[in-house]
Length: 499
Image 1 (cartoon, rainbow, N blue to C red):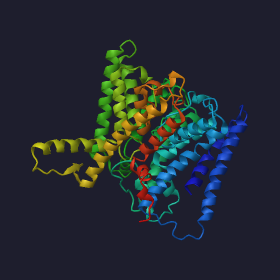
Image 2 (tube, rainbow, N blue to C red):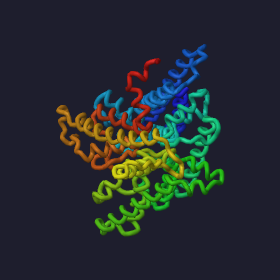
Image 3 (spheres, helix red, strand yellow):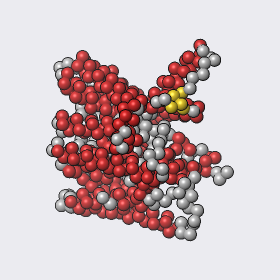
Image 4 (cartoon, rainbow, N blue to C red):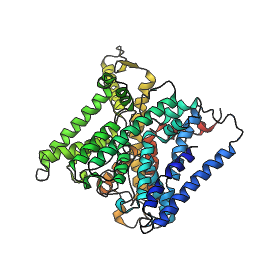
């Protein structure tokens, strides 16, 4: 059923393919999309046919739900790559069939995981049907393809809660309705409503319908795929930047707070500790970047332009959207590495943003202070609280383990990426990795940001990586989107045993 859902969503790209049927190469684009849809529908229908007569198929428990989410995301990443493969847009950047496949999987996974890291150096040269599919994968992955599956179909029985909790990002997943399907439906309704509002606002700013749709998909999913080579900065319009900044803020906010506002419970929003820290961190980062730009690049940045670009980039990176209003690769070192720190912090729990999440950072700092106090006051026992709520020891262990695992994966993957890229068979020395490119490429993919620094900066791309390196970065994107544990379970042999 999940494969059928992906194939059905893929069909929306046909509209743009037929609209551009008078363009050169349009026939191959239409063929590519149609073949991809047929493959998805065939796989889905065959699987449904094979399950006939099995009355227990809808009984999902924890292990089955984890397997569905983990394998489902891997499968969707592969199926989403089909239009890129069949339409031939990757042949100019790849010298072999395996290169085309690995690059297509990278682009597809980057879309579904809302990372926004791209193979294409010039996206505005791509057919609109491919650009639309590329952006639509963002929007589907932002709220979650499994959450959409639960909302639309709702045929998972008691396993719906396990499916929902395995995919929704954050620490404290909260049910907004008595039934999980109702919660999933409410989240998607809020998601669609805010998306529609942004489309209208961008249209009022003079953006055409196609670009409004694509940039809304990238904003609300905190993804960052743009239809232009220079991202949002290519428009050079303050109104568009302000509009997208506001909606990036909304997308990086816990969606349960949006639901509370709809119910008139605005005090809940104002009292939310994570939301206040989220805004405080963004304000502090904006101030520091703006001051750094004014002090170190006064000939290029006036106070107004420093605030304009500093605020946009701070919000874009911390919400893990990855849009750019200015090439931060040319910024002072302090601002660059402050952006890298924001990559790891990420958005709020229950938002479409990636990263560790603000609430985990808050709890990690609280736990660290408690451990320091415990060194000189070993008999004092203080409960771990957030927002007046006492948290149990399991949650305390979860926070410490998650932050530790993210750091371990970051350092280990950086070393592995350097090994995979700097091999003897790479004759072109320009494709050898420096430590800044390698480390920020890992940070950007693991945290779902997209652009990093140096060669993978805002004006760069990931096309120069070797095939194994692209597959590693693709895995990191899925690890980050599903918050590590769901994917790691698939690599544990005991997970697949019945007992």
